[in-house]
Image (cartoon, rainbow, N blue to C red; front, side, top):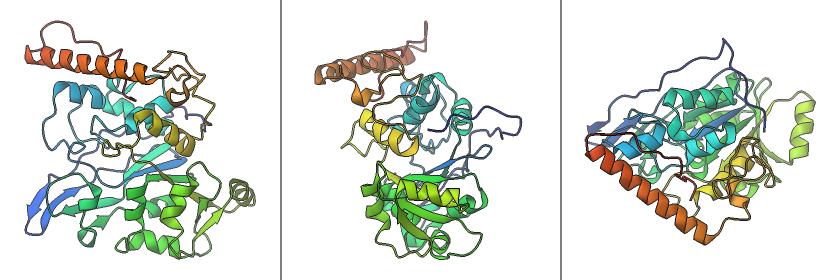
Length: 335
């Protein structure tokens, strides 16, 4: 993983992005995406499909939900469902701070200083009914953000990372901008590549190998590095697991392991130097997914503690927030 970049005076300081309110019309329910989040010279662009209703703050959340999503921030935020693992994974890869300790502005600063940018593929999404599932988006009525044009114009970007649903929306037949850049190979334009020997090659190839894009090729990691050494710009496309709570087949620590390998280039037997294992408490030696002390009994105990902490928070809020704010020191997001 590339080392997080140090703050500079040139790093843009962006406030939390906002969006137009949802619009209901005869064709369905339409929502708008949030703004591009990017600092100075990001190396990786992370993509989502479109904000969920929880991300758009379309309905009130409980105090504990607001606390867990970003230190009681209740406004629109990317990946704003408190049960979505995205921000927990990003922060565990880039800092020793946890999500509920930071404001949303502070979270975005960590993301940008770590060399990551964040955007959505679908700018304007229309669904037949109100909801969050990507599968409900009517592609024929969608409008798209120029994400690959941004990649073309930002020479520092080396990798684009996205879940499968997002990747499929990127190359859907109605997304003319993205399909055009993947198809039009010409001088001065970056090429795109899918690795055949990467940690998530199978998932990535499942999306992209069926597409006959002239500006997209497959290669090994060593071939990619050699091509870059020769001066050619090639941007790697990476498909990872969804961090959404709808992806219930994987636990949080399993999602974290996949994202660490694919987006942060952290090997399975390694951990960020500040990473504290939620199970054994050891710092900087391994991640939760590979902890030798992790057992089903430990997970059951952690789930019980999480439930008790939620009850304590809800009772505190119901009483008018009398007394000291309950601690979340023992809360384990990754179970």
